[in-house]
Length: 206
Image (cartoon, rainbow, N blue to C red; front, side, top):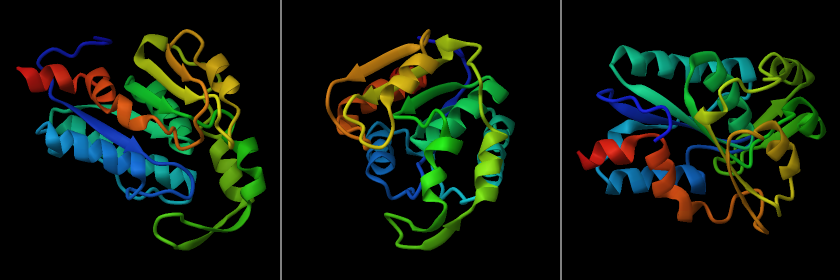
């Protein structure tokens, strides 16, 4: 088990991607599996603000709340959520699972400046160049403790080039699957493994 935290209650902080929501397929699947395993109270996922600064602040507030309650979080981030998760993991010494993560988000989201819609809530929002500037403030040039990370990526990702993630997390645990798409189509096959990586599987077995 990576970074065992013997005796410390654990939880998962899930960070969804751009134009996504807590109602996303991946967030709901992980939440449901944790509920099935009696770990429902150890899962957190809320709607992230459009502003990267505000999104990080919201996640940091939950991390602080969790730690004050004696819980140690693992961050699980998808796409843009993976970009955020990397910064949070480095800043707060957390374990992180990155699912088809955005690696150079300020560049990858440049084409989305303008009015966008949330794929799950239908809400319209404006993504601005000021948001791009905020993203740059949370760029992690290199990870310092690769043993804390697990990269899950599919080569068929039609939105992001998976090779960027393979390079950035070169010394971390990696699961690279042929085919698939940006949604990480085989997510359901890895739910228990993600829970176990966060240390919750071992805790649940005690």
